[in-house]
Length: 232
Image (cartoon, rainbow, N blue to C red; front, side, top):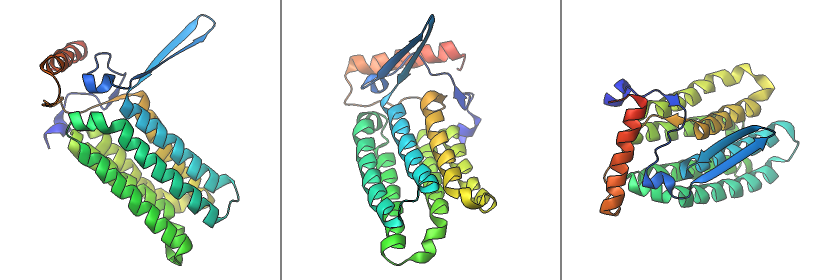
C-alpha cells in the first residue's frame, strides 16, 4: 500500500502547526521545577489515548496485583469500559468528523462491546473456557482496532502498533503468572507513548462543514508542517 512508502517517520516530536480539528479542546500544560520548564500539549485524540491508557493500566494492574473477585471486577470494568467508550466518542467526535473517520469510533465501540460481552459471559454466563484467555482476547481486539486505524488514517504507526499487540499474544505463555501485568503494560504503554508523540498520517482531507477560512488555514498549516519537516 502507498502509505507504507511514506517519507514521514513513524514517531517524532509533536508538530507545532496544528489544524483546526486539533486545536479544538487542546489541553496545554506547563511544568516548572526551579529553572526548568516543560511545556506539553494534548489534542483531543491525545486525551483519548491517555484516557484509555489509564483505564487499561487500572484494569490489568488490579487484576494482576489485587485479590478482587472475578464478579466484582467484571462489574467494575464493564462500567468503566462503557464510560471510557462514551467519553472517547465525545472527545474525538469533531476530529473524526473533520477527518471523515467516524467509522473508527464505531469500530472501537463495537470491539469494546464484544470484549465486555465475552468477558462477562466467561464470568457470569458459565463460559469458563474463556477466562484463561482474557488477555489474548483483549490484545487481539486491540490489534484489530489499531489495524483499522492504520488503514483509515494511512498510518504505518498504528498498523505496527496493532502488529505489536498481535505478536504479544505469543508472549503470554512465557510470562506465567504475569499475563495481566504484561498485557496492561503493552496496552497502556502503547497508548501513553502515542499520546506523547506525533505519528504518521495521511494529509488532512477537505471537510465541507469547515468555513472557507478554516479550510485555507488547514492548507497553510499543512504546508508549514511540510516545510519544517522537509517532507514534500
